[in-house]
Length: 483
Image (tube, rainbow, N blue to C red; front, side):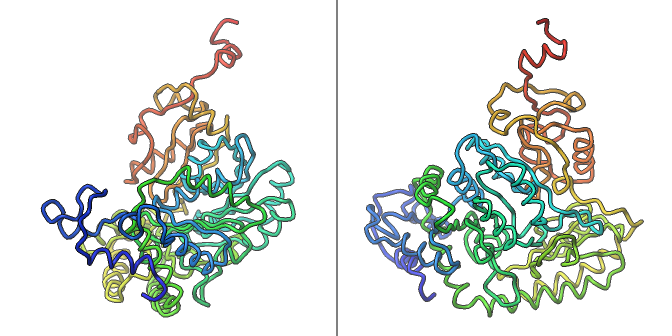
């Protein structure tokens, strides 16, 4: 691969016969390491030396920064989650108010706990045709900034999990007019901006920082991601400190090399690769568009500025089919989906999808939907996308407060102390600091009964929930404790 020095160095080391008196503990010795484990290698003492005097990682990060039009870049080995958290800790100080889209990934809720940030949530529009979130109106962010002139940053997810993009350029302009940086979780859009038929990525639209998951749509190892920033609205020194605070001191050289390789592949062959992906997506869209009751998320959703045409999100409510049943048919046909719930299917089309796999998908999917057809249902997206909850205290206060476990019916009206997330998509329906409502609990239990996995909470059965123990003063105010 041209211009991928990290990848070249990794391959050179893997082909060598070096006596390894360093970590990792298998040493690539055939006595304990098979061919699979032998692919594992560190950055130092393999790709570079112990002092990193060759400067191979900084050089690779500089190449990526140029490719995405950024001033600064870090390779990330703990996924976009680590990138999101570094972005938050680097942009705002403890106690700061931040304006946040409520459809953020759970990793940013964790960032608010770590950084002691106080989120003000803003909701995107909802698409009445699917029940899914559409775009974020720029005016909604502008109104939030006007109401909170002390806000330290704005956080968006662009593209969203369902592949839609807001008018990021307009939002960025509004943020900069208010003197506030725009920080974007672009985990699902690492391929954007590298083909004329695709929307630009957020850095090209004016964002000040951007996180990308190279492992989601590009050919890089799982856990690999990129964090970008531009100078001006952000202190790049502080951002680097935040990143180093969270980063492992034993990073995987193999993951680093895969990021460098994916970047080079995208720069030199991206149009060719994405030509194929776009053609595959067009085939799938055409095959599904003719099925009565099936809807695909598209550009007609409210406040949507653009869509990622490679992201296929299939709504089955109008056909009355159960997404879990169709997913089971897919398993029997040798097909796996990125996401399935009662209402949705997401067959993720990335640059690694083979044409014969698309043939297999289309050989079973339309027939499965027809076989599973039932009474049409009103559009009802996962509560992860639509949860309407209010904060009772900051995420950090709730995380570090005293907790107690109560029957879920007794949690109504209390402040949640844990994260409750239908997974995928990894968007919390409840997070620490939010007030538990009967509607959200009912929707979560309904999704669990339908087959969704409820993740990250201590009782996935949702019989109980961890909540914040009220202070004595709060209890006294309710008459529970004598004053």
